[in-house]
Length: 416
Image (cartoon, rainbow, N blue to C red; front, side):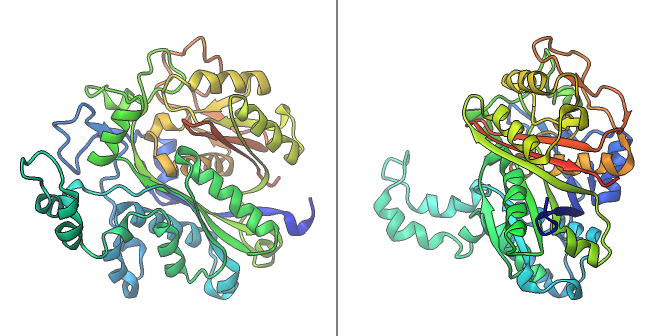
């Protein structure tokens, strides 16, 4: 690959249910801590699902300079998680303001419609009830309801706001984009960031995803449209990818952002390089995952013998079986990490945090085990990492998928 087209990963920004920041995340994962527990930040007693990957001790003030903290009033939790992860990633990369021009620093973020508290619209709704009190009068809504909505309300919930606030706080005036692809959003953002650097539009990009599903609005939506585990009595055992007794996914919150950098730019400033992003693939449809894997491996110029492990997208739903079969068919007995067993499903932030987990393993030379791998499904015949193991090969394949059939794959390779 031409020098100008090489893209390195120089900074990691995990904000997760098991740790905030690289060191806390690394230590917690290697100690095999679980990130799933009963909800403690809100009353979930009336819900059929009362647990998830919740971050209890997060304070966005810890990740924003004092002069900028007033901006936090304009950010809901999903945005604050992204702001924190971006700060951690840039600090980890030691990318100073002198090391890069503002116009050469970009932001690519995977997000979705940002959930809010239904109570925020309560006053407006009460003004607009019809005469019988069982519905909304749309004429009253236009006349009386809209003025009861706080003027800044929408700016907390449109998907591009995380990328907006990250760019403002980092004076990142380069390319800025938001990608909305559900559980694969962060990986799509990372792929787009790599392309942005390769075409010469930026020297570095903060890229990844953010989401919070540990709230009444998101849980209600998931209950309607997806399979959710109901293991309220044993929440730490609820997220069970590839297991025979899996009963659905576990909601979580967090952000995973990395700093991607032109390899020449990184080397010139003496940056530490975790790995190089050497191949990507994107596809759609019934055989989309297989096509995306082949595309990424072909670009990277690797074979299954080069792969240390596959970082799977599986989250404990029925369609884990299709992913398992594809991994087995294309890559054989390669070790598989199912990181959602540790923290649950972060939604739009999931694939970014999961990629960071593999980068941490590559850096340490040690892969911690997947959790809850005690009842393997014979139909999901993958070599799931059930015990810690040494990392002995240079490449990792990260998979991401959505319920709607979009697939994203990246190949990373550590420097040797």
